[in-house]
Image (cartoon, rainbow, N blue to C red; front, side, top):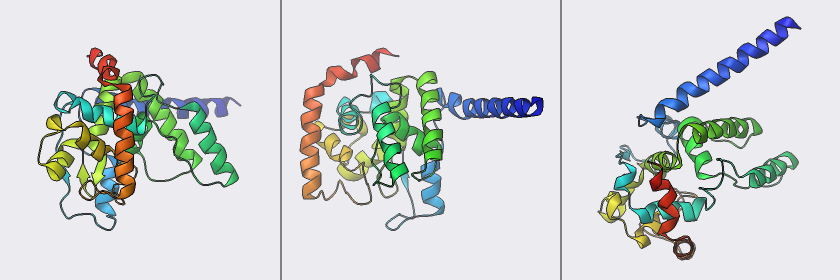
Length: 231
């Protein structure tokens, strides 16, 4: 029993220390690579370009419209949760257990963790690791930093990482110059940047853009004020 307790304690300490080592530095240091990017580079899907596009920009150089657009599209409870939407996650896990079609339940914080650290998959193990790391970044970082990293590493098209690269590629402007309409168009591709294109939006995308614009108006730019006050 003593051996078992010691082993469990050692494993717990290892998990906590290793988790802190991979999350805490990113509170201050911008990532130079991340899991999702590496998986694409080493096992490129169809349409993946020979040269990926990427350019980091600070949150101050990303338009407020773009910040609001991804929140409106992906996670309208971003400011009020601790990183995890408990009810949606529970329902998604229940669906997996009984074999139903997987339902998305990821907050922006969870998506940030998935892109930074994890592998594709729908297993309960992966979701558990995702939840643990999400709680850690919510505890260590602030909402502004989470949003900043998310907007800089998410894929907006095959090999187009981050909002600055996407802005330049699709609209020929910087991320700071994005209009509300352009921001909504970029946010509309995020569910599947290989199926949807900001360059040639489908009828479904146009409807989704309109819905995002409506949600943006309802939330209002004042929604971002608490994030900006965190600095």
